[in-house]
Image (cartoon, rainbow, N blue to C red; front, top):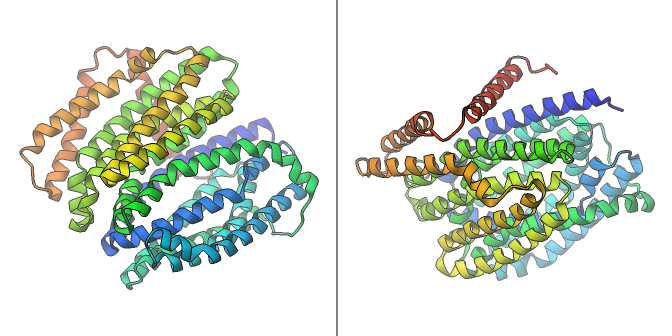
Length: 497
């Protein structure tokens, strides 16, 4: 049993380790993903995308919110843990059998016969993740975020190491498949060791029933998450084919890299709001600060990356990936609204509005299906536009829940976003003018535009935001200084609590 002070200290330590290691991994992942893209072709990524899309959805069916229930429940016994494990394992075995039976039909549906063998091998992840999820959940319950973050970092690096090695040896799509399986297998072993949990076949109906009610909304949320994550892959794979799916899969993964930095912030906001939910005035102030601070840093990153996308694709990925350029640019702009959605979601759920939030996500998910069905006839660019429209509408829908609770109008929200919108727009205009002098897609021209964009934005930030109060400037400075101090602290004093 932890004391409250112990819980807060472990939460603080784990949070900053999560952020630091996430930034470290994403920085490394960026370079490694470029290497893999150079070694493989779009068809390889398309085949892997079909296989992983099916496996990801089937895996989402095996856990009806039980892992989160194990974390959330105040007191649990080994019966709770082992019952969830037995349910996951049994369901995973069934899914593996169904995958073996249906792999050929799925490959025919997507007009990709090569994907049949990929599906069969990836189906091993069903059973493997049953052993992966439980020990990770135990560590989450014990607030061992530092351990989880380190293992996740090792898993991610090993995934790319295996993929690059096998790609060099000419394994093609199997480099991606074996990289995924090998890294998850190794991470599972580490989780089992650190959690000190041994799998045991032990099922209690009463313990299982005790966790059931909490999992219903979690299950629905997981299904919605799948729809919004892979419905675009589904339509592209079905109607456009494997190669366009490969282009889109690479564009989508690159566009979501900046978003991964926001995810830890969302976790922090959720925890803070959960404890402040009765103090609406403070919650409103926290929301405004979060919106202003994140938008000022994130908006220019997405806008700048969208602008230099043609240079990036040409220089780092090569000519064979140029067809993905426009969709990558569109998806970068979609990332702006995804960031806002992350923030609003953290506040909605933290304030106990998860039911209303989820119901609005149902509406946006239905719209996404319609948008993707229409957009796919315009190619992968049309699907990218569908994603952009959907994340914008999702923002309007879920913000409608929050504004009624914290009493903040849409006009007031826009006012808080003004600095980021105006400064990012001015930066884009300057880059557009400069690009006329550096039209060729070379590394030097890309570097010049990138540095120019950063310098222009900093200058505009320092001298042209006359309407921003000194309090806001102080908030930005304090947030940045705090992050630097914390990073230094955990780099040079990793055992500090």
